[in-house]
Length: 482
Ligand SMILES: C[S@@+](CC[C@H](N)C(=O)[O-])C[C@H]1O[C@@H](n2cnc3c(N)ncnc32)[C@H](O)[C@@H]1O
Image: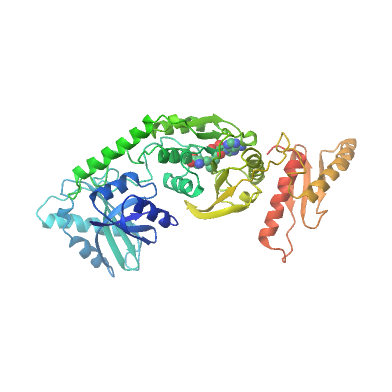
């Protein structure tokens, strides 16, 4: 049995623990950023091949306390490195964390590297070479206050790199994050999965691989264990052969495809298609160009899940356009997908409010530096009536109805007058209703919504929600293009 540590993004430790246990790991214990577990050789290789949530799988070699640069050097040089790899292997040190003495990770990495090279020299061997890009062996060092752990990284390149993604659209999700979103969405294998703004298709590809029982690392050619002296080739061959058989058995069942990806951008769909081909799931996914404003349920006789990571402010789009997009998306979900589940991932909780649906589960996650939220919904069976053009003013689905009514009344009156006067710049609304403390102006083909500062006694979230509602209603009433 080996004692191992699988790293993952913060917040996914619990999910990873379940995944590792399903793969046969024992003694799984959650720590910050990962899970400690025990495994025999087969389970170790199975975890490397099958884990969708691990970033790396590490074999801890030594831990110790570092109060000085010399401590770091002595701990590392005191190990029997020759029992792990020989001097012909190239290596690279990945150093994480700092403390009072080791203030830069680069300095830490250099000291570990020096200690390993000096060890080999003292054993009368050649000094092994460092290779930053394609090392045979990766050493992982982690320093937390004075606690140091040095491990052999058995994965090699990080495990989110599955090898299927050649090209992406804007803001693609990391594969490990996409897998976690799928696992949290409540989608059940064998049921339809629709991503209406699929970009390069990562969510659908991860889900399709789960269903098709394709190990995420089935086609990885280089591993961190290739030059490890503890590598058990027979066990690895067995686990790999088992994975190939599983994928073939599923493929031979010839099941009906029920994954659907849509996107406005036909170029990104081409990339998605290519990625799906590389991932071995092209035959399972239908791709079609389309605007979410015209989204139709591609499988109305079944109950499935809509999963999506729509654009959000930080990297894509502008606020009014996003408000319009989320509002329309909510309407399409309610009209086309009654009885289905939906799971939407966004960095902007307030944009998710524009869907106008009540979520029953929420998860927090980081997407790079962004704090994000995933909300799960059960879409009610009841169909809401929506105008053919979803941006058309329709009282049954309009938010901020009082505001929308007033704005429409003002428009009727003011636009007639402006026409007579030959004006194309005028104010349509000026804080007429105290709850909607905004001004709405028309400048030719443009509408400008400005917010008056809310009084201090109004809750900040409430004020933001009202502003979003006012923008949404303005878009609907004026029918302006975003
Ligand atoms: C954040 S990206 C999705 C990234 C994707 N999850 C991935 O991993 O590649 C959002 C996608 O929404 C698409 N999109 C934006 N507006 C849309 C609309 N009105 N209808 C359909 N797709 C739209 C964009 O083209 C973009 O590909």
